Amino acid sequence: MNRTEELIQKDINHLWHPFTQMKLWPEEPPLIIEKGDKNWLIDTDGNRYFDGVSSLWVTVHGHNHPRIKAAIKDQLERLDHSTLLGLSHPLAVLLAARLAEIAPGDLKWSFYSESGSTAVEIGLKIAYQHWQQVGQTQRKTFVALENAYHGDTIGSVSVGGIDLFHKVYGPLLFDVHRLPQPHCRACRLGLKYPECDLACANALDDILEKHGPEVCALVVEPMMQGAAGMVAQPKGYLTRLYEIAQKHDILFMADEVATGFGRTGKMFACELEGIEPDIMCMGKGITGGTLPLAATMANDRVYNAFLGDFDEFKTFFHGHTYTGNPLACAAALASLELFSENRVLENLAASIDHLEKGLAKIAALKHVVEIRRQGMMVGIELALDKEADEPYEASERMGHKVIMAARKHGVIIRPLGDTVILMPPLSSTLEELDLLLAATEKAISEVTETA
Ligand code: PMP
Image 1: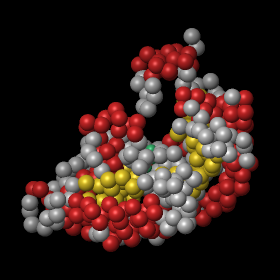
Image 2: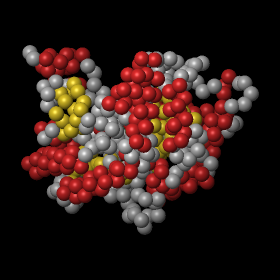
Image 3: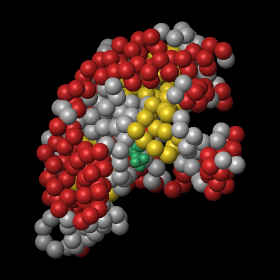
Image 4: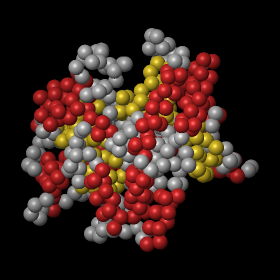
């Protein structure tokens, strides 16, 4: 056995992979990725793959960026870890201050954790406890979107709306009110945009007319639901939700775990419609894709409920061992410096434009029924019959087949059912975007036109 084969064998024997039916694993042995080089991943046999999903939407400036590496190494010379329970450290402070500068509206307070799921879990607990503190103890529920993904902890699955995860863990979850997914092509309400006058957003008003006084917050991914299948929200949708939430005085909680840090072309997707959330969850790209870190931000309205005379129940009962780890904070600060120095957001417009133009060829393929895009987030939905909008049988796993075919053409992409996801690093060159598009097109044609 060579080294790769040995590693694959040990992987099959010992490693339990996330979101993976392990029985299938031996038939589809993993690539063992050993190195990163800018926007590329290199396996143990030296094969190079373009990282077309930014290693699960996290890579911003390319892998192993020298500036971020240096910041982590430099911090490692000083302090590897120290707790934020009763102590503080410079980089946790500086990062919180920087996040307050760049976050939309009056978000000012940062609570650190390690993953997007925990950022959401914390947001839910903060929202709930906020209302308890201000005496509105009847507020015990949330409103969230159908088919949403907000993470995989019990609270974040509860506000998430993906049936599969609900079926398995149902008895452990709490109920929330659901808004119809704003999916214009496949409108749940059978309406057409814009004549619909955003009926799917107006549904929030109906829910709150009835249940408003029991609701803590609306939880929503702004502008584009990512892991829900890349569902782009129509113009004005987010604004409508925001206005209705304000009218009923519930908290607005934006999950920017996927959309944050430049993904949509702005630092945060909320900026695209001038939304100022009360609570905002961020993770993934916060460290540029290096170390695990997440933050849940809150404004004064939310935070101030935790102040006042001493009362132990004003404590926010949360805080992980590695909360605000100094190495991760160093990486996040260096990544944010790179955003400014390299004018990442300003330069991104050309990449987004290039991507948009390049996607036209894929949109014309026989089995591509829709392409949904927001900035550098792309979902390409496949269908058996494009005209009749008839999906493939789930058991055919067409999305999966396409991404496996794409690997042969040197790109790593991901499926969400029969929607193929492209999430290239923000640092992708135009040539790399062309390569990603060409490989995706080839893979889709090969799989769908020979099926
Ligand atoms: N919220 C959203 C919108 C996400 O896309 C994700 C991850 N896909 C999460 C939360 C959970 O993040 P993590 O996987 O880092 O826990």
